Amino acid sequence: MKPIDWTNLGFEYTEADYLIRCSYKDGHWGELRATKDKYLNLHACATALQYGQEAFEGLKAIRGVDGKVRIFRMEENAKRLRSSAEALYMAPVPTNLFTDAIRLSLKLNIDYLPPYGTGASLYFRPLLIGTSPRLGVGPGSDYEFVVIASPIGEYFKGKFHTTTFIITRHVDRAAPLGTGAYKVGGNYAASFRATEPNHQQGYGTLFLDSKYHRYIDECGAANFIGIKDNTYITPRSRSILPSITNNSFMSLAVELGMRVERRHIEVSELSSFEECAACGTASIISPIGMIIDPDKGRAYDYGKEPGAWSRRLYDAILDVQHGRRADNHGWCEIADI
Image 1 (cartoon, helix red, strand yellow):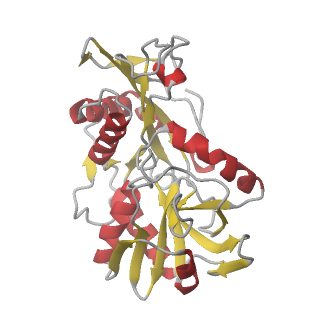
Image 2: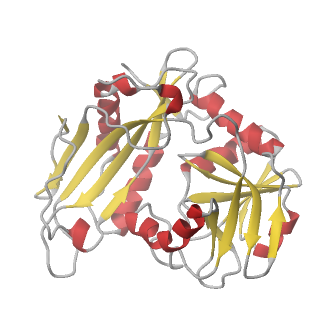
């Protein structure tokens, strides 16, 4: 193992020792197996490549202030992967198989778990792909479940800061009754046409609903949060991914004395928010300093510094993950390593 500068890791792939794999054949899942081979030998006609039968997840293990290792909400990730698999007509991964694979990956890659105080964590990317060779349109019969591990650093280097987002109306992230509510690769590829030009200018992308272009949908690959009048507000939509981080924040917001609303948010309401943010596994919470609406020729300014509620929520979830705050909801599994 090469020495790792834990404090300078970004959200980039750093190779750990082992992949964990499991195959679905003849109607059932086999045994978990560990391998140092990071490549998958796929038939060129595999349904993952031909018809997009692919879904994935993302979760973290974190070393706490007490030296214990906590895996954050992995049963929820297992549940969401099952939902994605069923939406794409793939064999769902049982919860016990999913969680056993994460535990095994952590155990075998424990040298890549960053120390407490570095802000870094061990990230897991569970992946489910169709492997059956098929030329005619239709689902496969064979699948491969893979867990990739990689140490990652803090999303915000040095200082918790704000980001500028641009509203886009020329690209729809997902159809109203499509796959937007599932964590499948096609959703992300479909968004690149909007997100990449904005990223090159240093901006994030705010997607609107695909039917009316009237309501807030997603912030790039994250959920949207608006805060005003001591209320945490997040979109209700069948086209956005149900974020585990957002779900956690809603519970923490109540603990911190806020009201919580999940409902449609019209673009015109942006002017009334005191704070806005994006949230997801990678960034946890990414405060928004400004939202630009080029089609309407206006901008919504929330300040150059993160708002007070964004800071409190960010600190609260980190405190749970690092064992500095009581885990009142049983979100963390203490790893037996």
